[in-house]
Amino acid sequence: MTYVAPPYVWGLFVATLLYLFSVAHLMEHLMRKHPTSWAAIGSPLMRFYPGLGNWFPLMGAIFLGLQIGLPTDAATQQRLWLVRALALLCLGLMVVGHSAGLIPRR
Image 1 (cartoon, rainbow, N blue to C red):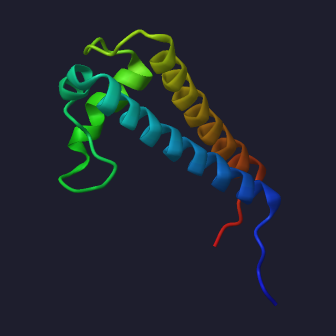
Image 2: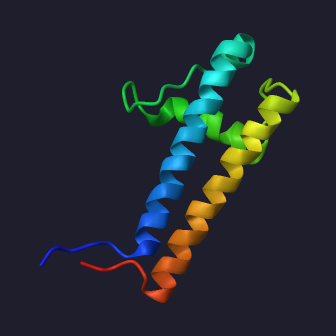
Image 3: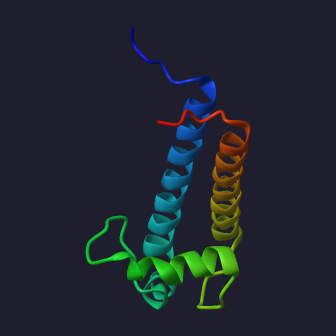
């Protein structure tokens, strides 16, 4: 018999993909429209090489509001809030799934 994931797992999968897409979209926006802010963040990449260390300034700017020169225009602020909201959605879905036993344990 073929295993098919429950709808909750598919929802978590879609929310995670949307979060990753929104982070990539924010990074692309900063790289193209605000190159000085992009350089101040450290030009992070969406891959693991050269390491995760270049993600810390970007995540700090997104979630902690660190003042490292992020622009305050409406388009950038909308993208920042979208990333924050999707991150909280993913985290909330994972907490609910583990506490309610919706995520199957292996």
